[in-house]
Length: 573
Image 1: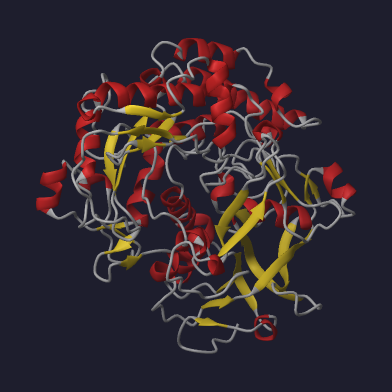
Image 2: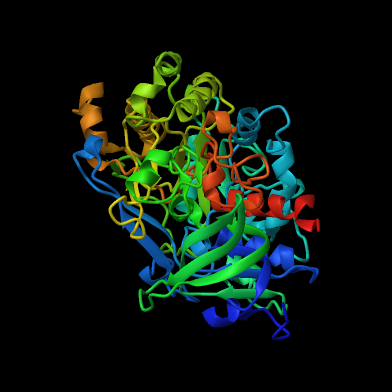
């Protein structure tokens, strides 16, 4: 490929089609740009990134111009409500629009990945930690603020690599009300306060945000892995929707795309010499695989798509972080004043907890109830036996973890204010993301299948009970009066109705739809994230997570990309 300019650059379709790139990456998001940056660092490999969105600098993190919103199918367990699935749709992907929280989960989250992967798996916490450190450049907190708010961290679990320009930093405008919430949590028996919540254990901790303290602005994959880079071997094309990966003898040879705005009809094809990497996210990656003939045979045939590889797990195993109903109280005593909230300055304080702590009287019963289920009854009708087998493997692990306190189940975002919504960090229901068989290239069909496993409703009721107990017991000096769900709602049946009315199946952390699992367990990619049945088609994004982590997902996605980019496989002939 002739080098056309002495810098990384945006190219047009016709120009890109004239070249053979070593790697074609689909998606300029959190993982895609990380990979592209690392693979082009030494100048020996050429990379083209194909992005459906555009370059966009949102003044507000919730500006719609940078997002892709798709309504789910109506959820039968949620009174037939539909919920919008939201992901990034611009250069930078979801890292350009998320809430900026930097969390990792516990060591157990990743050790489970390794257990599911088999004896040779290298996706345990100890294997991931170097790439968490590589992915994010830590800026230390202000010492005075740290002392005032009990903010602690462990520099040993963070990196400060000169070639990492995705920054994490700590707020300089912490809310005074956090002190109230922190003090109340000190009264919860058995609740841990780790030195650093990103060090592999859970409890109460302040988490940093993805902000560049020098510019006081969002730090995301575009600013860290594209802006300011001057490499002639690093190209990008924007505004293009990939609708097929062309295979020849199970080898990915090219990527086909069309204008995302529908302005053109003739597709453009760009060739890949070494690999094609899908980094389109947990909603688009399964759709692109299925459009390319990789997925459940029956689904593809129904859509009139030639079957290249019958891979039943594509689009299955869909998980997210549901948000529970708001538990609210009135206060008759004033709280310390707080500055107005600002997502670019607010610091997060979380209490991330295991089930024995949240539900000390019922965790054993809940574990036994889940372990005794025939999990196939709670999966979509006709689920392939390999996918069922994979879900059974997860069931056995998670049922055991419900009795332990090493794996997080719920996140209580602490504000010191008289309300909170529990975020379920662990769900047992599994959804699907598939092509629309009557219009395969339109938006994918998203089905959260919320609360289809009844254990999820049981768990959320337990979380609501914990919140009620915590507020009424540990904020007693503020003379709290319950507003919602209301003191008159006491039975599980009454609380179930309260949960169903307000439950949201998404915290905007979709994962799992191209899972890294053995093929016999319904897996889509192997331990090197290569799609089964192919030689050189790889998936690197949130869709490969077999089980969702107890954390916001952006830091994990960065680390996955860093880990894969360091693989010796990339540097072969």
